[in-house]
Image (cartoon, rainbow, N blue to C red):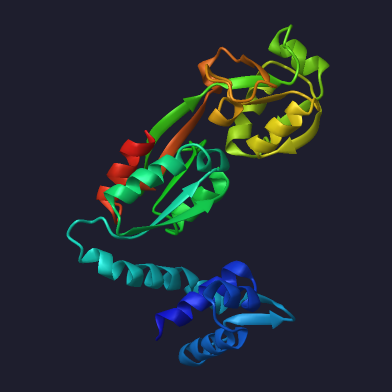
Length: 288
């Protein structure tokens, strides 16, 4: 069985399109279809349901997909496994959006010097989505908001940063946080996200009855809307807001919530027994 055929199948399932897979893999759509058909013949089952330009995996495909991913990953790791330094191979990192622009760039720059033969695949996503990717063994590590539940024994984490909850506004904050939230339009950090739960907990615990004008799980966008004087928001103090001593966004005013119970914790999540422990150890030192 040609490993490239499994790669095409996985790509089709992930992208939902044979044409998109052809573009990603730099081959023709006909070649992708031929690879899938070859797999179907070898496995004696139908792998895709085709409807126009869209394709969906069959039940048989979903049953074998996890193993197919492991086979592809293990195959790519063979050359790295015989490298005694443990500093080569593909290293897959997941990161939430605020980390992509703050912690990741410098860490990758330094890792490039430390492990020049390693290849870095960066996957953006929400904390919950990246956690699922870790569970499915599609990532080697992920920087996310600390899960609001116990982490299973097959995974471990390193706390990287604690961010205070802060009220941000485009106008000077003259009253208390409670007064501002009651009187001003509220742009809510999506309460279904792990970070947004913290801000929502503060609002609920202080009996603040407030209807938001919109819910967003994107701190960059929230920052932009607040700077346009559309409302105030409760968010973690990440570097992009510049709420600390070095303010990068002078158009934003801020007021911290003086209670550690509402801090957002960023953690590096990784397997308890990682495939590339030396790279993991170095990565931890660079992002801590």
